[in-house]
Amino acid sequence: MSEKIIQLNEELIKNNLKELVRDSVEETLNALLDHEADELIKAEKYERTEGRQGYRSGHYDRNFTTTSGDVTLHIPKLKGVQFETAIIERYRRRECSVEEALIEMYLAGVSVRRVEDITEALWGTKVSSGTISNLNKKAYENIEQWRSRPLTGEYPYVFVDGIWLKRSWGGEIENVSVLVAIGVNKDGYREIIGACEGMKEDKESWKDFFVWLKGRGLKGVNLVIGDKCLGMVESLAETFPGASYQRCTVHFYRNVFTVVPRSKVREVSLMLKAIHAQEDKEAARTKAKQVVQRLRDMKLQAAAKKVQESIEETLTYMDFPTQHWTRIRTNNTMERVNREIRRRTRALGAFPDGQSALMLVCARLRHVASSEWGLKKYLNMEHLNVLEFSSALDAAT
Image (cartoon, rainbow, N blue to C red):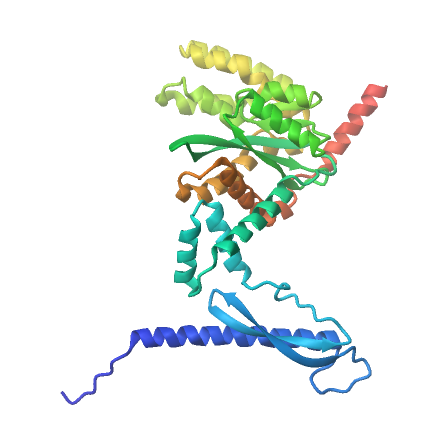
C-alpha cells in the first residue's frame, strides 16, 4: 500500500490536552490577580499617575488545587495598600468545587480512606485525613450555624412535613425522620426556617421541633399547612395556640382513595375537588354534605365517613385571602423540596448515623434556599394585611 498510515497516541494526546487546560487555567487566574492588583493601586505596571495608591513589590507563589490539576498562583505583593482578592480566599488551597465535593463525600458517609483514594484518582493528589477531618468539622459548624440561626420577623404561613431516610444503627438498618419547616414571611418570600431529626415522627418529636422553632424566634404564625401526621396537630395546639391548622387537600384525597375501588376513584376525585372549588366555607360545607350522601348512595360507607369526619380541617384556608387559596390549601411547596432531598439522597443508601443524614439534608436545603426558589416572591402579602385590618375593624365596631 502506498498510502501512509497515521497512528495517533491517544494517551499522549489526553495528557497534552489536560496539560493545555491546566496551563490555561493557571494563566487566566494569574491574569485576573494582576488585574486586581492594578485596580487596587489604580495604576498598571510601571505607569506613573497622580492617582496611584501604592506600588508593586514582586510576588510570592502559592499552590492551588483545581479540577484541572495543581496550578501555581503568583500572588502580587503591594506596598502602601493591602492586596485583597475576590478570586481566591485567603489561605485557601483548593478550588471551591473541590472542597465542596470533599465535604459532600464525607457527609454522605464515605470513609476517610475512600475519600483519599477518590481524590487521588480524580485530581492526582491525595488529600490527607487531617484535611478531611478539618473540612468535616468546618462543614458541620457552618451547617449547624445556618440551621440554628435566629428567626427574625413574622411568618404568617408555615409548611411542615417529615421525610424518611435510612441509617445504620447497631449493625441494622432503620428509618430516621427529618422534620422540615418552610415559612412565608411578611414580604411573601419562602424561607426554610428549620430542620431537625425527628426519630419516629411522633407527638414528642413534633412538640420538640415546634418548641425549638419558637425558641429561635418563630412568631406571627397564622396558619400551619401539613399532612395529618401522628401527634403533629396536638403538639401544634400546645406550642402555637393562636395558629390554625390546614390539612393538605391532596393528602386528604389520597387518604379517601384508600377505601375507594379503583374503578370509582376518578368519579370520587371530581366530587372531592368540587367541595374545594366553592366560593366560600359555607358553600363548601353544604357541598361536602351532598358528597357524603352521594358516597353513601354509592355504598362507599368508609369513604363517606372519612369525608364527614375530616372535611372541616381541609377548609381552614378559606378563612384567608382568596388570592392565597391555591398556594396554602396543599403542601405542594414542601413536597417539591422533599423531592429534591430524595433525589440527592436516594443513591446514598443508609447513612452512618442520624447526624450525617441531618447534615446532608440541611446542606441540600441551604442550597435550595439560596437558589431562585428563595429569591422569587411566593405570595402577595398585602391581601393578608387588608384582611387582618378589616377583621380588626369589624371587631372594634
